[in-house]
Image (cartoon, rainbow, N blue to C red; front, side):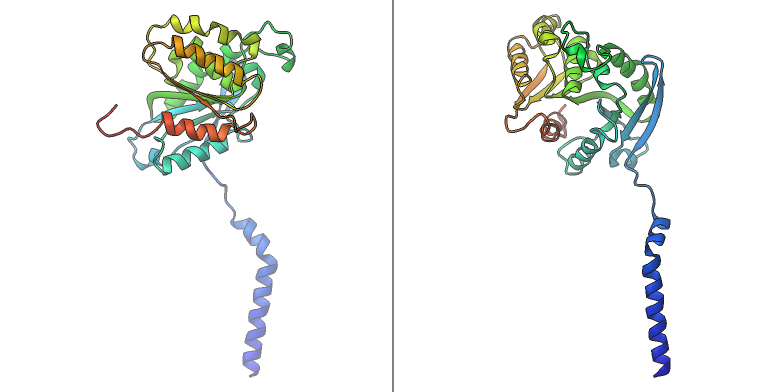
Length: 282
């Protein structure tokens, strides 16, 4: 009986010591949670270091010969929209409602500078110390970021871009001014009010200057006043002036607000424009 009492006491003492030291043991055994890659580009075009975040779907590592298309996203920092869009890509690819894409997030430095074109509106110029840098940002993507992604990862030639709000403005501006940069353009609540709606006013002439355009455009708007009106105007222009070959869709989402539209709109857009291809069909 004495031996049994001694052993029981020893077990209780050992268990108590383990409990007391559990936090320290947990700290010692922790490891980083890795969901992708991150690297920096010392840009000569925008004269600053740009942080890039990359999510690789499982299909990328399943074969050393697999090549995947690339989805670029402004607002792509870890504290911005990268994590929730990477999670959405993971889920949609996992349930086979979206083709696998490499997701490339571009972390912001001066967001309102990079996402906006020149403006003649004095009120626009008050939103940041510097605006109107979208052309330089586009040059950075084309001449520095894209070559770096192609060098680092196994990619196809297919590219896409997604953005919301001012980043949506950048997406639409790029589509209208330099449509050959990407294959697919996706914009949610684009800030088309910028520069007295000049981009929308110029849209018809810009579209008609390209009699054929084999691209895809998907844009959506919430109930946000000042945004839904300009999105409707762009939709009307496309209805009468869309070039041959352009696949486009405008999604009205009146139950969403500017602060809630990104995730539900991205879910619809990705399922629509990136849906898996049927065997035997292009």
